Each structure stands twice: as C-alpha cells, then as structure tokens.
Image 1 (tube, rainbow, N blue to C red):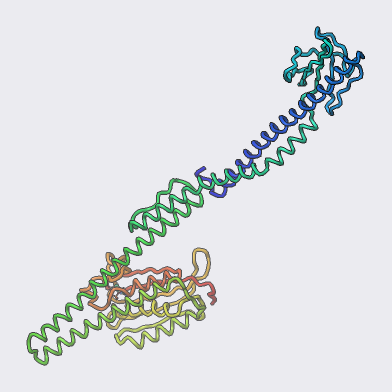
Image 2 (cartoon, rainbow, N blue to C red):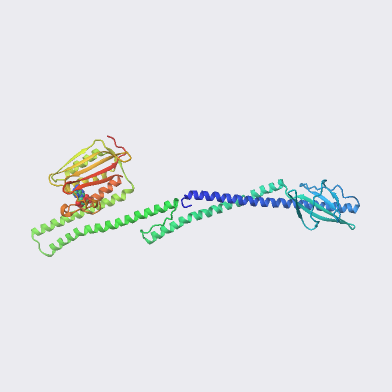
Length: 458
Ligand code: ADP
C-alpha cells in the first residue's frame, strides 16, 4: 500500500466500497423481496381457506356434498376437506395427496416435498355438530412474484446504496487525507517554532503526499540555507564595512584632537578618501547582488550576437584599465545565444577587471569565445579569460567563489571587495551554464565559462 499512488488507492478502495455496497443491497433486496412475496402467498392462502370454510359450512347446513370448491388465488394452491379422523372428503385437484403435517387450525405450517417448500393453512368448518377440516396447501415460492418484489426492493434500495458508497468514499478519503492533515500540522508547527532545521518525517510512502512532503522538505532546506546565507552575508558585510569606518573615524579623531600639519592633513584626507571609495564600491556591489537576486524570479534573456557583445566588453575594458597589460581577443564570429545583456557584460567585465588587477606589469590577457558542445550534444558558447598574472594558490582556489573572500592579501594587495567572483558565478548559474578555473601561482589564471546556446550557429 505504501508504494501505491494516492490516486490508485482512492480508486481501488472506492471500487471495493461500491462492490460491497452493491452486494449488501442485492442481498437485502433478495431477502426483502422473498419475504414480501412469501407473505403475499400466505395471505392469499389464508383468504382462500376462509372462503372454502364458508362454502363447506353452507354445504353442511344444506346437507349437500362439498364437491366443486376451487382454489381461486393465482398460485395454484389446493383445498382439501378432511373428516376429523383424517379421511379425505374432497380435494380441489386430482392426484395423490402428499403426506401433510398434523392438522392445526391456529397458524401456518410448512413442509417440503420434491425439493419444494409448501405452506399449509387449516380451518375447522362446523355446523349442526358436524365438523370438517378445511386445509389449503400452496407452493411457498412463486418465482414471478418473488422476482417482481426483488426488483422493486432493489430499486427502492438505490438511495441506500448511494449513501453507503458515499459513506465509504468519505471514510477512505478521511483515512487517506489524514496524512495530509498531519503534514499540515507538522509544517505549521515548523513555521510556528521558526526552527528551519526540523524536517517533516516521510514514512516510506511513494504517493502524492510523499512528493508534497519532499517538496516541503526541499523548500525548508532551501529556506534554511538562504537564511543562513543571509545571516552570513549580513555579518560579513558589517565586518567588511566596520574596518573602513574605523579607519575613517580614527583619521577624523586624529585631525580633531591635534592641529595637523598640511602634510598630515593631506595624508589623512588621502586615507579617508581611499576608505570611503572602498566603502562606496562595497555598498554598490552589495546593492547589485541584492537587486540581481531579487529579480531572479523573472529571468530575462535576449537572443544576441555574443561575439559582438564580447568584443564590445573587451574594448571598453581596454579603455578603462590603464595598467601596462596587453588585452587581446580571439572571438569566433556570429555566436548567437540567449543571454541577459547587462549580466553578461558584468560577468565578462568582472573577469577582465580581475585579470588586470592581478596581472603583472607587461603581462597579457586573452579573451576567447567559440562554439562548444554540451553532453547532450546541444551547442554551447565557451568564453575564456586567461592571464599571465600572479595566479592563485591551490589551497585558495576553491574559496575564491565565496563572498568577501580575497586570497592571500599580502600578494594581491587590498584591491577588491571579494564579491566579484561570487557575482560571476551567480550570473553563470542564472544562464544555466558552468564556470571553472585553472590557476598556477606566478604563472597565470584561466577562467572558462560554458553557456547553453539554443540558437547558436557559426
Ligand atoms: P576581488 O574584489 O577581491 O577581486 P573577487 O571575488 O573578484 O574579489 O576575487 C576573489 C579573489 O580571487 C581575489 O581577491 C583574488 O585573490 C583572487 N582572484 C580573482 N581573479 C584572479 C586572477 N585573475 N588572478 C589571480 N587571482 C585572482
């Protein structure tokens, strides 16, 4: 049962419920129909015997014989007239007289002959001290009458049948859906306790409710990790902002407390300016990340010439970066893909900026873009940014995607906020692509991005 879907369970149980109801009502209709038909046969027998009793009494009174009496009911009964000693005086039908039970004028009797049940009803007819025993015998079962009342009974029982099926289906739904109520209670209690570490237990079922349980549990996991990220993000952000704020405060206090020389003043001003610039950059990047994550629900893509876009970003980066580093590109023409233009520019721009930031004097940066092929053989666009800069050590390499992470600041200097690569990774994920990095200290770094490309053509 645990492996059955809820739909199948309800279907099977409902079919069983309908079958039980039909069998129950059919048996009931049969019992009622048979009993009712039997009571009609008995009543007719009683009426016929009473009629015969009157005729016999009249004949005794008039002194004539009791011949010619008929069973006039529709059930082929026979009327017998006996003397009190049991001698048969008259039979409304010829043929042998079956062995009958003892005479009893009070109630119905029954007997079986040739595998058939018979009813017997007796009456004493007496006049002028003469007593005769009148007896009616009839077949207990009249198939036509019985079938008629079974059918009537079955029709009358249809509402009961419907009620029974409805009751069973209600019961089945209640049992099946009780797990849904428990699920609701568990989810409400988790939300009420605000304990996102808790999970709703799944008890090995594989039906729709189990799917819902796993969806809610996945949602809770994602909520938990998103809250954890948020907490970490806030604490990292406050930590990152505290340092420049403290430096600015210290410089301001120094200027306020003493009378600084023009040189000290200029120095303090330079420090305050640098720290304020750093804070501005940090706040801008935080805002961009937060905005981008908020807009994630409505992903927007345009079918663009990625080759042209890449060349544009490369040439803008060349103009913006004054470092003595040569930036070259090798871009396959007419690479068409569905991308978000603004995010693509930010992604590539960040990687090229990093290559400049962590490049060496007289170094080289090479940006390439070409067609690739995914595992499912669909076309992809591969973009690489390669430099011959300071490189990243093996132990730092896995951490560069973390927010606020800056590898080995003694080598890299205080050049960034540590948010650029986490943003790049987020943009790649937004496009459903992949990113990887290869790097060797003092040799260089190469980032390779692969984006799905539904409309790629060469
Ligand atoms: P940042 O603002 O510090 O550059 P990123 O998230 O862009 O932040 O990069 C994280 C860290 O990864 C950098 O601090 C730097 O140590 C390292 N890194 C990134 N790109 C390169 C590169 N091209 N060469 C060497 N190191 C790099």
